Amino acid sequence: MLGALLLFAATASAHVTIAPAQSAAGAWETYTLKVPSEKDSPTVELDLRIPEGAQFMQYEPVSGWDVTVDGNKVTWKATGAGIEPGQFQRFTFTVKNPAAPGDIAWNAYQHYSDGTLVQWSGEEGSETPHAVTSITEASGAEGDHHHSGMSEDHSAADGADHSSMSDHDAMEEIPSSTSVSPLVYAAFVISLLALALSLIGLIRRRRA
Image (cartoon, rainbow, N blue to C red; front, side):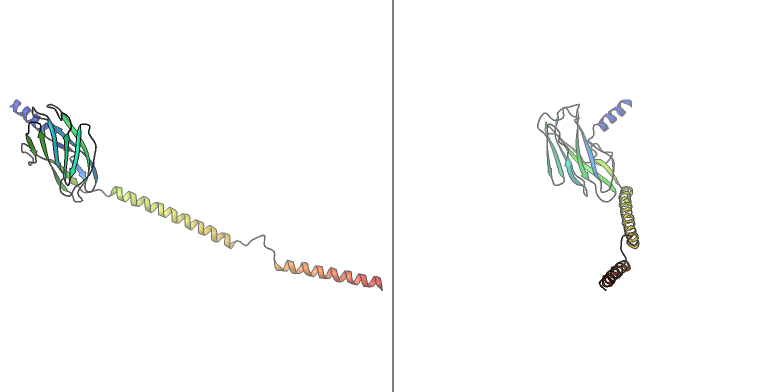
């Protein structure tokens, strides 16, 4: 009985898996594809099907592997020995998740150097199950925070504008202390005329 359990655990751990097992709808998620080599021959190629509604965006280069993308099919092909027995390899890539919540299945096809093909496309509980990611409802907290920040900045800008306008209005209401009244000019002219008349009268009296 114990031997059967150990064999089951070893078999399960040898499955092709994808992490994380949960992600948000519409998010750009970086997934890690883990490929163990469970046969006596090395793994030389791995084909992955991107689930419907998801969009493949980019991948991280791995030394010793070439990557090709054809529609929803992404292929990693070994340029050297591949994944030797008893080893595993991780492949990292980014996908834009579907917009709607739900489970998405990742079907993978593992090619060995002896020509053997293992199709990781079965349902959970089968001998060769596909990996499954649960897509959950996206949280609006980040979006709300972003919009809130914009509103606060906008309000601050409005407050600054209103303050500037109020200061400008107040300055316009204050009369200029350096302006000269026209009455001052008139008094000055009259004084000059009076002085001129006094001089003329004085000159006339002296001549007389």
